Amino acid sequence: MYFDEIFAENPYLATVLWVAVIAAVAFVVERMITRWLKKIVERTEIPLGVRNGLILTGRLIVLVGAILALLHVGGVPSDVLVSFSALGGAAVGFASTRTIGNLIAGLFLLITRPFRVGDYIRIDGIEGIVQEITLNYAKILTPTNTMVSISTLRVLDRDITNFRLRGEESNLFCYGFELSFTHDLPTEKLEETLDSVIERYAEKLPRKPEYRLIKLTSFARHYMFYVYVEDPKDIFVLQPQLAKEITQEWDKAKT
Image (cartoon, one colour):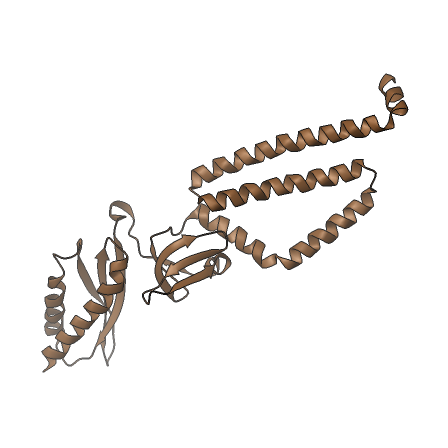
């Protein structure tokens, strides 16, 4: 009753108190969200730019909530606030559906980490070395020295091939490519020719290249070749070079 009398005599005092309470709650919630996001960032090794973006987004959400609460305390009817919030949310959602989808996909990629910066990957026919991963794009340097940006939403919709080996040899990349040979030579002679080329690279690379027969038809024999490198940039040079030498030796063996 005592406080009711005070508020009745000073109508603005209740508003001031509510403003103070809302400000205090908003400050506490903002601190909690910021600390929580920082812990997630530290555990997942999210880049600094992405971390700052997440923290800024969290603060904006708290700020919008505080503004709506203050408007309500200021006397704006609740139905108007609800209508305004729904209209604004619908407009923002309609205008940025793809952007939000990219942001969510980017967070998923950064947390699950199917690949990381420096990996040699293939996505939807595009392959190369990952240069940067953001919430919106994965940037890939292709063998033609072209930088390709793929939206994170598109990345999640496609199959991802990561050529980095797992386990004890995680410092190596294994890249495979296919070559086909007609039946002009017997299999034994063909594989002797392939071995002669493979041996040239046995001492040059961290692991000897390998090959295996993957398909046999009446027209040709299809072999898959595997090269192992420590620096993914070597794949840009080794794959065409090895394929060229194999083809040349194959032509010589047929004559």
